[in-house]
Image 1 (cartoon, one colour):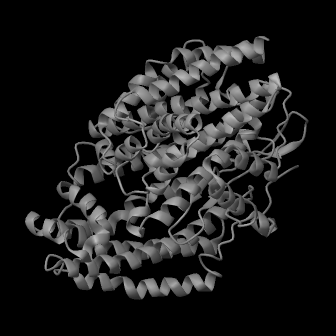
Image 2 (image 1 turned 60 degrees about the horizontal axis):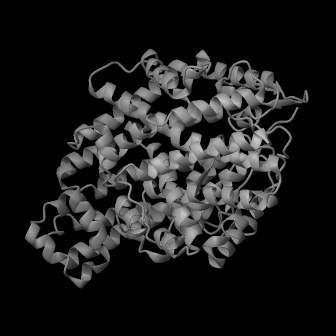
Image 3 (image 1 turned 90 degrees about the vertical axis):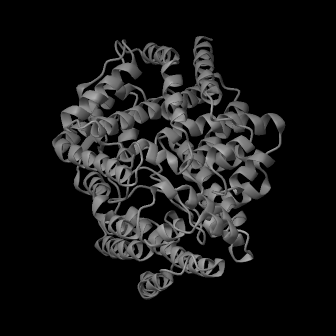
Length: 598
């Protein structure tokens, strides 16, 4: 039987090198002690911020030094837990830091209310002072939040309660990544393999429909055993979002989430309405998939297996890195060399699955460290090459942003992050289509992009509807129960999969296993991101000039996302980019049907 190795059994070269953060655990502990002794210094500025621009600047610099230390400490702690969620020492380290961060939040809670209390004329005068030249952008962004910043006493209470209110996220992670056990399952060759969060996608790409169905049912059986606990956690997450929105005087949790990025609600609703108006090509694709796979009916477990059945899906890590680097060549030598070093020799990436490791993939970069990537790379899952390209896009976004911006301006919003990641995936597809003369390989890659657009544009928009609707239910005073969640999700499944699709009853539980639902109003950015990325990729490749795109990466968080994209030539305030991405999906489906019929 094949099973995931223990963390201690993984080769060091396949793991993160966290030495750029801290040489060892003792170094982390020493810096943690410094944080504990120094963060109270910020409180010494209480009552002084309106006195002069110089006093305000001194306080902001003090907070910046604390924030940079917290960023290092938190990244190290989080990556150690992500690598092995059963590591008691790592969990203890993260928990202790979390406790101190509550105290830090309490200590600095006076800052925003006190800055907001500065009279308008005085504030504008402060911004002309050389002392605050580096702080103009964050101060103007903060001032915009004035209507949603409470008094110092209320801000202190919200800061004190932050960790307790957010406990649902940690509960979900521990339950799904550590406690839940999915057993073992024989693959198409008869080999017994462990079914895990990581291997589930591998089983769904098996050619034998019976194996896919068995994996699907066995996987969801474990979720069914914990469905009431998971539903309670999801309800807690929704209530937390609504609580904070009401406490800060927002009309809704969704508007609270969109306000920070200055994204109009119309962009969110426009995404949903545009996608809903273009479901016919999606249904056509499902029917094409059913026909090619020779199925009497198509189910969810049949939507991930590649349509082309005899293409190689054994791609070692080094080969995957090579594909990604060749694909991003249009972005220039600096981009390629930097990314190549990070993925090959710099140990930016924790590559493979091990017991206790967090599922999925992510990029986690900070101002002073390498932009680390977590993967659970599987050489028999070709989509993992796309995942690597995706996360590399995030990491290089961080690399360019931190190099061009001050610490206080380098944090780019998620809305923009999803542009950089999906941009790389589009370049990868274009590269693979250009370099293959094999008809079946072309069909394979077309199928891959179709599935990428389906999963990122259609699927994430369905998820966005679900988040919108369950928060609206809470805000309307409706009960958030397991049954309620499943009914809302079943309605969306019916709408988005169409009349000819067979929906297994277990699929209703999918709404409980999507990690992003426990940190709401994130997923719509995947859909808007791929739409903007497609437009930017088309501009860069057709013009042969990536200057605007690289400037976009370097912009970090210096402007709001809609403004940043407009400067790069993409207007997200209207439906055109989303419609263009949907048209690309429809065109690729037609091309795939034609290639398969040759």
